[in-house]
Length: 160
Image 1 (cartoon, rainbow, N blue to C red):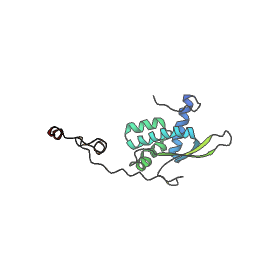
Image 2 (image 1 turned 135 degrees about the vertical axis):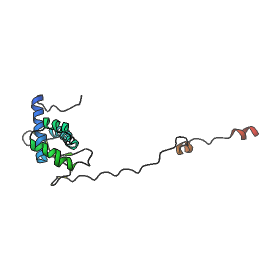
Image 3 (image 1 turned 120 degrees about the vertical axis):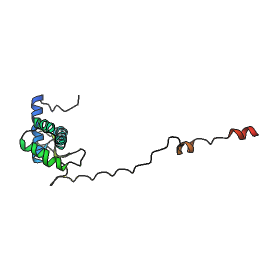
Image 4 (image 1 turned 45 degrees about the vertical axis):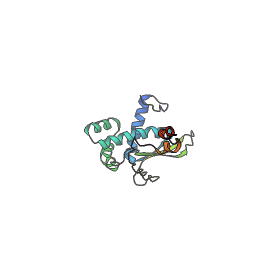
């Protein structure tokens, strides 16, 4: 069973709120909310983009059961699926913004990465290290040669 934040709400209210927030995030591509809600929305929004990338009828029905609005489903399966076809994950970013005046709750923007007018540019992907040749298990390692004492020949001791 996966762990998730309860956000101090009953299950029906919490799921309805998260469904609406994911739908609004897909529609507007950036929303401001509290940090805890943004972290929960990030998980669900990344799952919805993954369904959009699959592009199957089953994925479309699963997404339609969660998000609200046909325009949101259309955007998931066309625009966002095309935008993130090369990306393996991490479709959203959470940026902390301010402390809310009324209750001092930490606020944050959650937005999709690699879009126009984003608040912070995406980092370039880290280069992969060069591939090393596979090691032969029968050769002695440099460390064992460095720290092990040199072997003495038994034949030279018996000759003396």
